[in-house]
Image (tube, helix red, strand yellow):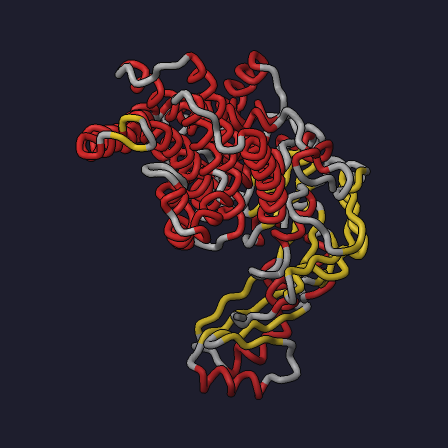
Length: 301
Length: 258
């Protein structure tokens, strides 16, 4: 087991960030943490890479207790934080080599790895560029390269593709899957359910410091929502009317949208008949529906 | 988790090297402007005002004020580095967070910052020392002890500064620190005239700030006269350095590992 958390708690003053969290991550798996902002995902990750201390409970990484062995644990993992923290005064390559020094990696090995990793992340031409001249996507790739400098067994990725264009997202996904194939364990958070579905073997859905459910993406979809979703869009008065009239069909209301869930498409026939001209979309259920069902469609504070 | 200076391993030096590396890429912005203040002090205080004062405590004013100028160069540079410099690395660039995600600990980052601030104070005051040497101001071989003493003074003030940095939420609080402590230290600790000019209460205040001890010892090395109380002064300098370094390192740990 790479990560083992048992009744993990984290409190900041009066604020409970993580409460009674249990989870296990096996070697070579991609484990995803999803949940609304403020659910406790980043705090959980920070405890795993030892820059936040659990208030209570037990957390072991590589079988080592985070409280007693932070240095040994950190030596064996790589971190892609949510916010870029590259050294703006150093070049692309210098960023990697300075980072390698913190791990005690000898100079010549660091130089070779720097070259290999820049190639791996398609950054070779920018090896000597100052960091501020890099685009957002390049910075993100550089941070991933930096997380790989110490040849880690576990990589922790906090929203690795937020704000990136589709090309860069796909490149990062390809690289992460390649790393997983090499037996590296991944722990990641994301707000993109397509990303979670594509990369993660197992997902932990968090909300308000708690675990809501755990499972593979397909189990979660099967367990929480029907296979088909009919989305309707209308003005608020009409939405209320439809919601009342078809109250026995499972559905959710969100502003001007209605989401009906069904086991077969035939269940929606009566609805079509009653409102033939309404704007609608019939599609298979996705992880996003599970997420919104479990954590609510409304925005919270 | 083990905390404080005793938990620090040689890993801390890697962070010092990182700072030195960045410093060297920006050296022209770092060396020359820092020398402006001490050079102006030599010119204004020593040669300008000094030409009216002639003598103070039996020596030419320029000879008297040199210790203050040299000491100011050390502590001011160290203070700037461990206030605005460290805060910028910590909050604006998140550099510390990236470093403590590696085997380096928060305590090591703290000690590296203090050591780095002290190093900058040493570099700056050594340049001033060489300028003063070239001006022919020194008359005694004992002045060779000045650079190590300036390193200690810079270390002392770097530690106090980092303690403050680790406790504040926003940069604006530094204004209170500079107005309430740094500037009084720079001007009240016997820098430009003897502490004995003050009423007794203010004298005690001045002697509590370790800068007064550093200046008194420096003056005893430059001018042929004993320090007021060499051993207690040295112990006070070393003791406060040690205590504030330990406090700063622990406080930095609490700030970074939350």
